[in-house]
Length: 191
Image 1: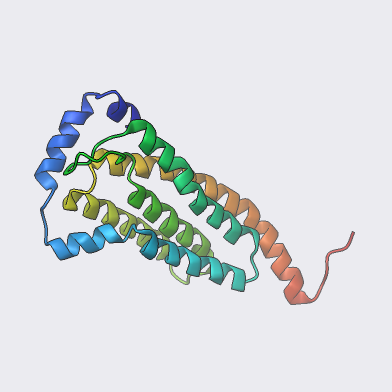
Image 2 (image 1 turned 90 degrees about the vertical axis):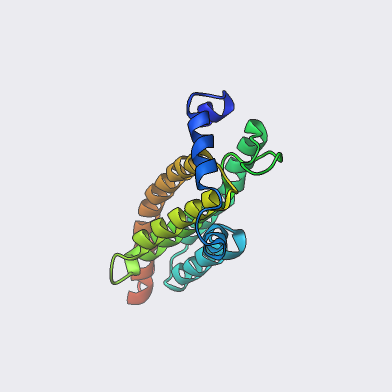
């Protein structure tokens, strides 16, 4: 997708046609609400609550890793925005690829789901994260804030970030679990 956008590839005209057909569709208050799900003011506090919960549960490494993943978002997205320098659908301003709101939503909600999933009585955390992330992307496209490829590029980029986070959390989970078990049994590590 990045190649398509940066090199004016064959997908770009289809992306632009689709965006022009979708921009402005749907009730404005709803599409604005959906787009706002990816703002730092909405998505990051959700991750912060999940981090707090994980800390309360005695975990240390897992919440730290989720926070690092969230901090990595601007480090990954901003250089791409500067390098690609893509104008927005309804503006001449540039820096629209990849979508920062989509990236924020995906890592914040996905990170929260990864932290909460082991403790959730039902498997609701991951579907909720997927729904909130997709709703953000749809809102951004319908409002005309981003081209569809901007959103898809963020999903691909942050999908890789979340996969790395999931692997790191799995490894850290066993360390946190053994530490939590020792603490609850009153045993301290030896050696």
